[in-house]
Image (cartoon, rainbow, N blue to C red; front, side):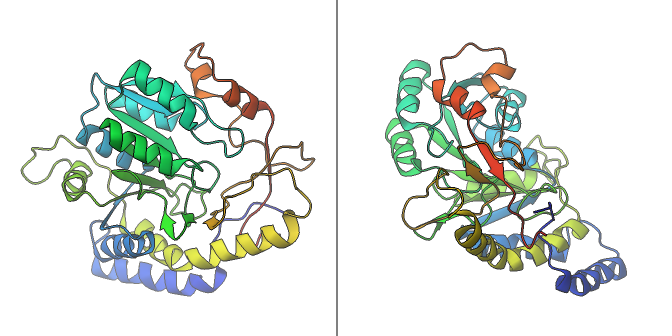
Length: 323
């Protein structure tokens, strides 16, 4: 199966009509489609607020600076993309790494308990790897609440994922999605911060736009443009179709062939950004991550599951209507 962006050809005419409207109205930023994209994502994700950004990084920085992690410790899984720990460093925080589980590749609750006692963090970053929700998210959220720790969710892979109908980004104070060109839902570049915290939403709204108009928030330009937002509107309308197609294809064609795979808990729906197995695959698309962040940072942490995962998982091609 060859890589293909999950964009339905039948939507091209609609997209061109959106772009024609943008050109005709001469408002290429902060217009109708930015607001519409946010409304559609908010409704789909079942959160009170959704704010678009030009990148995942913009949403992450807005959240981390709102919670003021400067000089504070943030716990982060090592099995993630460098964007997650780098966002902490850029916000002035200190990163310490947590091990993952072998069965879901996501943050280990048992190791998190140890690291919380050791490092006394202000924030925990949980990352939903591969398109599914972290299997221990309920325990992680409950522990953070008990300890007074802020929980943030990296939802870069988790478009359309749910567990008992609950979407990624709704366990913590905020969740940040990525719309990079390879993602299940793509605007080429872009991101979305979802939250039920109105104060965070108001801060993020100013942060992405230089702190306008009173400049009390020291933000920069992280705005999405209207053309990208228009793509996001169409893609969000297609999200359920894309997720259903991927799940049906996986169940029919891949699950019987790959029994040694990530097995989801009951009532969990994966967005299938990746189809992850624990046996070598001849035509694999590689690994989710083959380099652990703690090793990239030159840390000698004892994270045995993370080290094992880096060597012992592969991704089977699974793209929306890919050939």
